[in-house]
Figure 1: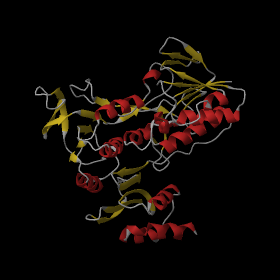
Figure 2 (figure 1 turned 135 degrees about the horizontal axis):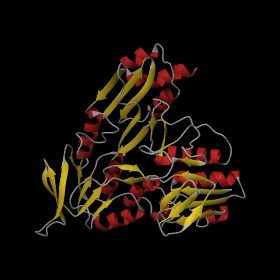
Figure 3 (figure 1 turned 60 degrees about the vertical axis):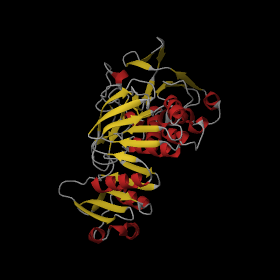
Figure 4 (figure 1 turned 180 degrees about the horizontal axis):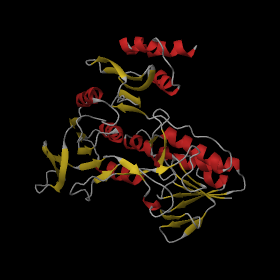
Length: 414
């Protein structure tokens, strides 16, 4: 059996190892598009912060790990998937045949339509190569503008703060982490970050980036309504999208990502998808969704490999969840944190203490939550949502006092 895996991230690596454990004789090839050992993108901020070196980002730390397992690594981009011929066409003109294929190509950063982005010292923070460039310019006291205060941008923010730069954060939405936090939580995170020395400008659009004719800065960012912001380095973190361009013209059905069934198989038999590119099911809503977090990537890689090797295993879906550390302030969001039509909600706010909890209900089930400044409720909130617990009388008790989620969990666990 010839197995091919597109993508050398956590999903692809776990899948390859699972396949080898299931089939000692199979040919297994991982096709990764970067000239690096398999690594975790989520470790890059820790690299920039100086908490680890480059080897600390590697997914496997023994240099001959894949060789010992008989897993071949090919460092080329996939340009086309020929589903009829069961063949991958690579960017160097070569090809790879397969019997079964896993698409675990992950995501790529979104480039916003801003004039002047294609200049030196303006970088995304997505690859190890990006990190090397950013480290070159992000010296102590340098002026850095970070475009984007979403989840990824907020993680990068902490790394830049640790490098002791003069940081300005620009976000076009009206709050920080708008896809994860409501107005209350997003604005509390903003105020916290301002208190930590970050110049945070929400509701601000970058219109263009020009070189500074005076030479006092490398660039001048022209923004609305904040005017001109000088910068020695610009880091772009304005979102990511699944990497599916190479599937154009193939028989594999895509939407935002690659559509899969409850065994992670695509619309083409014998071809599967996992990780950030996989558009599967959110079991909390029943709708299709992409949950681009590393635990989901690893688990879908494992489950896809089991199905590829003939061990039929149902993928029940995943839960949308995020946990973020914003310079020491922990925030989380789970499930349908925005609430639903006809649902109930409750909240508890200590603005001066930067503590906030908000719960969303559908009838007597907890379906979503936001927390800020507290970690003691995280596990039980996830457990209540994931177990679809019918709270009964505890629903009204939580509406009166949402801090009692631990009691609700224990009462319903018996």
